[in-house]
Length: 95
Image (cartoon, rainbow, N blue to C red; front, side, top):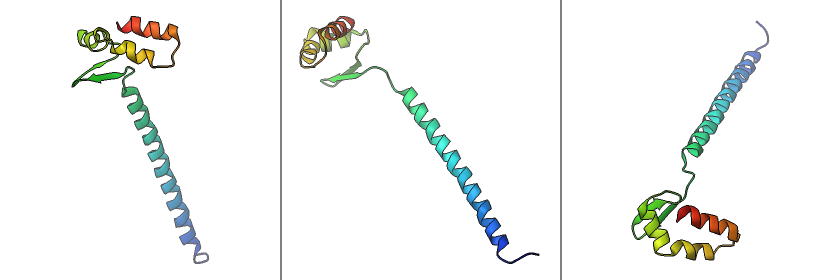
């Protein structure tokens, strides 16, 4: 039958292999969850003012009134360290 104690060591090795498989499964599941969450996020910014919100880059009238007609987009762009070319293109695209 062999020496006593070897059966116990074999069981420990089998248990460690099973736990390692669970770890890999959990790791891949968490990676899949992260990929799913990042792909579900929006690629535009949400702008919120006076209880109303809209996405920067949308073509809605609410966004135009909120940012362009009020002059808020010009104020925000003036306060940034962006290049003038980028500021002009952001303003042109949104207003």
